Length: 406
Image (cartoon, rainbow, N blue to C red; front, side, top):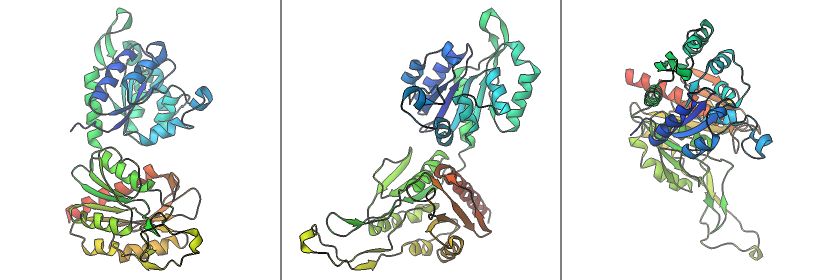
């Protein structure tokens, strides 16, 4: 399978004559299975058309940092959305102007703002006249970007605009796509790892139409599954949420705690990593009727019984080398409660989730957590769930390496 299949790539196009070659780059990326999101600068539109990229890419081309103000619809903050969801940002061509702004941290358009708002790898493909390419300011800016971890695909020597010949010609589109594949291959630290993730709140029937559930949206579990798949893992997501699986993720849909237990226990032995992000009900109605209860029949007496806590079964079945990650949603005494669950459930990592604040936990895109492992507790600041998923999986990758070395 192509390294690019299902990968989300922001294709930034800045304003040089080589912008026309970005059309071929876009087509090649899409043909290789990538999800391409074009971002065009105002200067690039002097050389290429927005409609062309919209027709060839996976999403319409974006050109403005203020799409709502300009068009009356769209994302309120497109640069952060692009930066957080991208697997890689490619700028081809990258002009001297673009490289200078990026190195200086200037974000005065959508592309430069996106470059500053991402933790994804960045690959730039410079293109300019030889004199510009060789200028000390350009070379110092490139050196700065390289020190910061930006990948650079060197320009070629050949025919330039205006009939000149020399170094500074944009790298061949095929070579650019090959470089993208190479950079993404470096981030495949979970390749060959089998990851089982649970997500969402279980739904326990009261009668034929009503349920007892909780506020879990499944967003954190989905984020973990998505990022794990991006990093090369074979991911199975057991979910109560009726939404499509992230790219390259197998999904198993369940409703009740018992159904989730059956799905998880049937797969847990084969998993290298188990991430228990679902909010599984602690109680369920005992003997719910198979019909709908009627209002005129009066207020029913609902007798609850405990569900089986299969997290203990997962812990009991833990095999050597397997990594178990748990979640604890708490409204008070976060560290103490999460630490207790960490110890009882034989976990390698516990994510203590503070759900007492409106900006974290259930039904929002951000989380505020404490990570607990054998070495201690670390409180993290407010993060998007995608960013938190990356940090959790960084820890998982480190734990896997330690277990292999033992």
